[in-house]
Amino acid sequence: MTDTVDTTAADRALKGRHRAMWGLGDYPAVARDVIPELGRVLVAAAGVRRGERVLDVAAGSGNAAVPAALTGADVVASDLTPELFDAGRAFAAREGVPVTWEEGDAEALPYGDASFDVVLSCVGVMFAPHHQQAADELVRVCRPGGRIGLLSWTPQGFVGEMFRTMKPYAPTPPPGAQPPPLWGDEQHVRGLLGDRVTDVVARRQTVTSPEYASPEAWRDWWKTVYGPTIAIYRGIADDPARTAALDHDLAALAARYDRGTGSTVMDWEYLLLTARRA
Ligand SMILES: C[S@@+](CC[C@H](N)C(=O)[O-])C[C@H]1O[C@@H](n2cnc3c(N)ncnc32)[C@H](O)[C@@H]1O
Image (cartoon, rainbow, N blue to C red; front, side):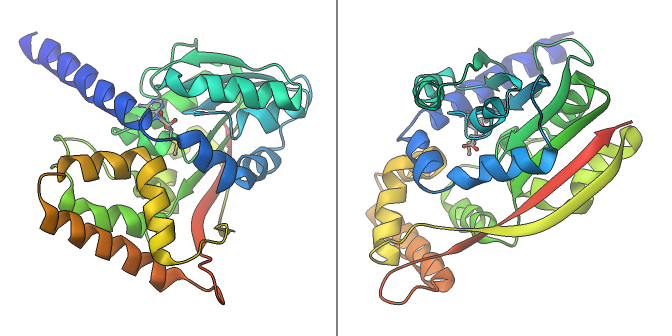
């Protein structure tokens, strides 16, 4: 009993830290300026249609929820960090579509079994720390015959490498927390979903970044907008040598991916996976 209570309290504290982290900087600017096409790609891959009931898990500012609503679907955008919803509401209003915004943990979704025709997550559920628990929830709330669509950064792509680059500078993750980019590994996701799904289709694709003046310019902007990166820099703020080393490592990573001529342009790889609920 004590263990359960402790685990629950520890999990609440962890989720509180995650919520605070995603509220740092300006994540909606990342969704708007760097990866707006990913929500549309996911919605198209999942074949979202008018009248369907759709859940976007870890929806952030609605990168997938708003394009889903544009099809005429009835969309709920759920996220741990409701601080992102104002930007989402503004996005939905600009596009002229209704979206319902609800706070929720992907590992304990506040919905009944089989509530949705389609369950989506765009570089979202991958950040919930307990992968099996989150996958079980995606499956549970999707009706039999419904679809699950997931878009996740791959371990070997730019964002996976970025998390590996930042890891030595970050606090040790709590026991049981799994690395987000594992959701970009097809076999890992197939294992999580198991025989509760059929018709799995997975492919690796890339999204091209906007142009930045240089790798350093990307890094300096990223340090102001992306919560996980901001949190790591804050943790080493009293150590100028480590801060300089992380500055160096992130710019070097961007330089390695830079395929621009005269400006920095990068291709970031993701796994796009769709499946049918058995
Ligand atoms: C990279 S953002 C993606 C947001 C959006 N899907 C997009 O494509 O722009 C990751 C999102 O995961 C959310 N998140 C992290 N952990 C979560 C959890 N345990 N449950 C629900 N959402 C979570 C964060 O609040 C954040 O909005």
